[in-house]
Length: 467
Image (cartoon, rainbow, N blue to C red; front, side, top):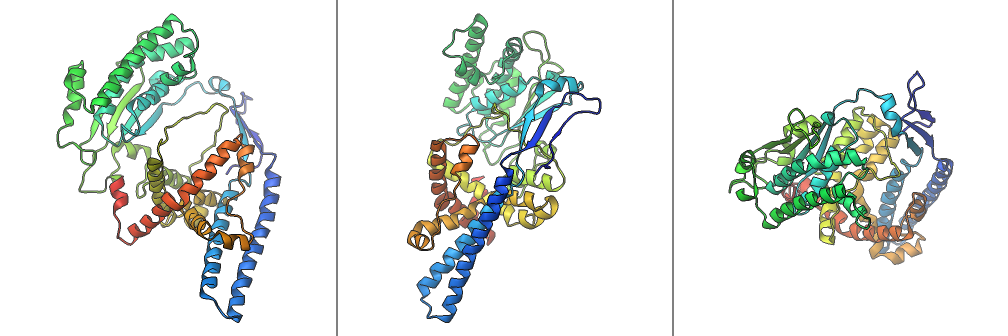
């Protein structure tokens, strides 16, 4: 969480600011609402306690007592989850950035390392990885200081071939972006946004080169294997010699291939190219590979011990004093691919649920360790994600005993419609989120919670296999 004061980032010589921050004007209302809502929760718990005490002095009906205890337990979880959401609303800020002042403020920019992670060429198509790498290499940044590392957990020769083709196309694409001052530096996005407009001769030429590269990559992906006749250079053929019959996704040697090197490679206009490196870390069936941090991941400081290494790594770094700034520009800074069918969505969310619970119930859990290291508000903020799967308990209970919820005057769904509207959402997006939440609650969240419990007592090993 950031401080309450409004401040700007500027030097003592009154250089133009890089950004300004100010507290959201609805903060006071959020805090008043939190107080009122807390009183309502206390009243609800008083009602539960009063009812349970009555059972002590009256004849107990087992089914009624069970339902009361179940509902009470559900409300405790709902109250806890609500408290974690409020930690993000105590002092929200808005930030305004001034990137146009960056050149005036910083003359000697540091070297920039960008890591792109991929795992499955069929769930994460190689052309998507290619577009990501090309957009990064075309950053408005000193080219010789940019290094792009593609970390391929799947060890796919299809991804490596696609990146080899991307390295060749980058010789045309990077000078084209600089010449045209292009903002949308992903080729797919650029050509899609201009498909209904007349193209210049330069646009036609670069699109022809891109479509040719795209056709070669998609043809290889369709075949499922890189054949030697598809490779023009002998040194490129040597890179694929490691893909033997014994090479599998779970068992293979380290693969490191330098595709572009700023000291040697030039683009079509004679300017230096950024570094582009493909890395696939070694894997072995004899040891859990998600604990085997390769050299690339060690450099990044990745922490292992959970299926959600990104959450766990950021959380631990934050506990050790790392300072971060939330930046939410009007133009989206990043786009990503999401599963397009329900089965893949639920499987992915189940993996996340297991990994988050591994952190939430470890010795580094956000409630005790996190609150002590970062403060209670930040600890609760991380707890919101860490105990994500616990939504399944109240959702499932209220789904099967709605009549009891009605008798106790308790609503099933959180009132987050206003939140969607305040951040620019639509009624349709809120309704879609509600439906998706109800699907995840009694399915992937529930199965993730059950599988984590089974894994904790040594019964299930499915979580390791699925990685």
